[in-house]
Image (cartoon, rainbow, N blue to C red; front, side, top):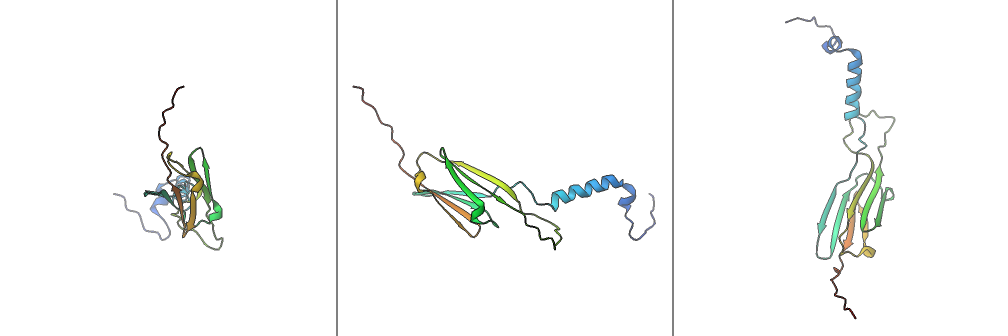
Length: 144
């Protein structure tokens, strides 16, 4: 066992790890724990009742102007971007929230009224209601 004399302000890590590795490790830790994540996919809850399918997206910190809803070929797509706003007067120590552009797509069943879909954004939650319609029944065609 080797004894090392204590020197205030000196770290044993400084003598054992090359500075280039130490700097790379510090950069990696900053990237992992301090910089905002750009992988963002909002949580989605799906429920159903007799009248409709209901989708709830958790979009805390966003404005409704930042959210887009599209319907094409029976696919409902919710997209947008949640941006990280850094105040230059403050030092950021940790960012655990996710930020960035997102897209969530849901293939709707055949029995929906696409012309009656509604959306409401309240308290950071986007609620999309897709009313159910009649299921198309098979029809026999008579040959003449």
